[in-house]
Image 1 (cartoon, rainbow, N blue to C red):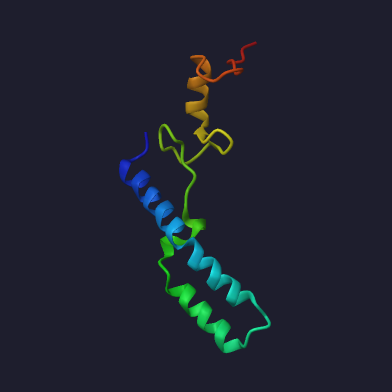
Image 2 (image 1 turned 45 degrees about the vertical axis):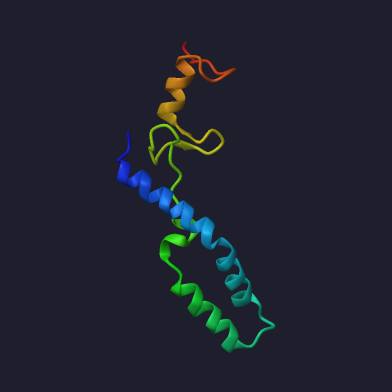
Length: 101
């Protein structure tokens, strides 16, 4: 089980990224637009840099929904490898069985 503070920090980052996604995308579009004057593009870069760092989607860490584990994460199932194996062993995931040979 991951530390609750790390899981909560990641959840705060996720919420902040959702709240500022529209503003961040608009500023990035202005900054990338080569047709605009350089001063306007630079102002967009400055405003983008003034946004909180944790509002960037790249700072969000994929974590297991059950345990909060940050490594060995399967995106499709949103579970870590360990939680996936435990659920498969107990028959909680349809169509998945523990392999043995």
